[in-house]
Amino acid sequence: MRLTLLLPGLAALVALLFWVSLLVGPAGFGLGESLRALISGEGEAVTLVMREIRLPRAILAVMVGVSLGLSGAALQGFLRNPLAEPGLIGISSSAALGAVIALQTGFATAFALALPVSALTGALVSVLLLLLLAGPRGGSLTLILAGIAISALAAAFLSLVLNLSPNPFAVSETVFWMLGSLADRSFDHVAIALPLMAVGWLLLFSTARGLDALTLGQDAAETMGIHLGRLRLRLVAGVAASVGAATAVAGAIGFVGLVVPHILRPFVGGRPGALLPASLLGGTAMVLAADIAVRLILPDRDLKLGVLMAIVGAPLFLHLIYKTRRAMA
Amino acid sequence: MTALTLSHLIVHRGVCPVVDDVSLTIAPGESVGLIGPNGAGKTTLFRAILGLQARQGESSLAKLSARERAKTAAWMPQTREIAWPVAVETLVMLGRIPHLAGGRRPGAEDHAAVSRALSVMDLHGFKDRPATELSGGEQTRVLIARLLAQETPIILADEPIAGLDPAHQITTMQKFASIAASGKTVLTALHDLGLAARYCSRLLLMDKGRIIADGPPKDVLTVANMREVFGISAHIAQTEDGFLFLPLEVAR
Image 1 (cartoon, rainbow over the protein chains, first blue to last red):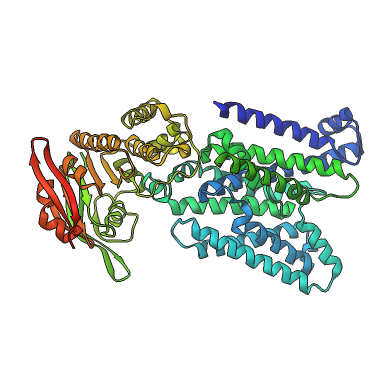
Image 2: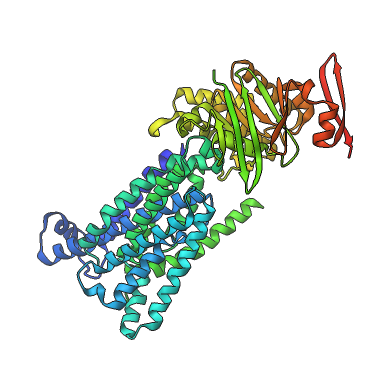
């Protein structure tokens, strides 16, 4: 019952935030002026800003939000653990490592999309390593352990690259990139990330029924006809494609995949499959809202999206833990 | 009408055989109890029967595809796992997953099956409560309802009545007996030998991976078998209330 109201409500929120996101920016155009320019192309400068800067930025916020929300919900469902998040299995840190190597070696400037391509390569290598380490059966414990090991390894190499960097300018550029942002992106970024993300989203949605069955544990799920090995493969590939692509175009953005499924779980009656669409919309709303906030709070200081998300997300998470603890007492 | 057939089923853990050359057939209509001390290999036997475990030999269930097997046999594992606070009715509906091919939503038939299972386990009053908020015994009843809702010709349950109150232990055993009588095949692992004696039509006594006795309760629950396998003495009586079995004391 509640589900029938929740999804349209969240969808309306996303639509509203998408419009607001198009209207907020340093150029300060009027409301009517911006929309006219966006739709009919009146006024050269305004049209350029709307179509080439704000529209791709809003679209990327949606894509990143969908990827993080969906991946977080699917991972928590598979691992049967509300503390799981996309960063846990090492995809984001490996994608970041790929990007950082590109920034440090100067490969990032070789061609327009060299940076996202390097990040995707990093994500791909980590997935192959992850599946190799986690073994052929569909266990969740080995997946977590392998993920933590890969995260740690990627973080270590990241530090090494920064440590040995001969160029302080490149170091600061790298650090800023890692903070995560959607500023100054173009439709090229949309074009490189979208196909991969779309494949990831489909894979993640296909896990819904398997995740429901896993509520009763691995053995019970398997005897209900769920092939755990294949389920895990679809999950890992889905997270890698969507979160790998999200990190490649936006840097590392945490907390969305952790907090959003946690907030929405009670509203869908706890069922992991029903949480997927809700978390998709919730993640999108959260990233859109945060990306609007970074432009409103410090309009001229380029506040990074990942930083704001962590500042808002961590206390929110603490509050949720406090609420859960009280509910359990 | 589906029988369960095992032939020379062997499971090794290291060099040790945990299930050692088990061959048997359970025909439709039989309610079979699997008894044996802790570590006898009962759970491993279930997992091997279902094909969840590396094994040698044959099991008629392990040969099926995952989807076919899910429509043929339902299993209740010994570990009671409910990961999320889902409503009781939603949880029991999970048992219908094998019947919902290709993302189909539950239909009238599925709701009817869930409702029947809830009635049998006396759960209609709980159906909107989050399953994780119920007591241990109530959760067990919910999980048995899930098992029943799958409506398969073969039912396997690993210690299904552990932790239930006496009334629900008896109803559950009676339900399994009547399901078997309706032409299905039921195999349950049990530690309550008294209930096993009364409600099972056949008992399998397992020790150190081998089935060492197989037959009607009065032939399996003998003074000699009890001393040798469980190390207990027992009071065994044929009364006007039927066959009674009461463990007395440790005989070692």
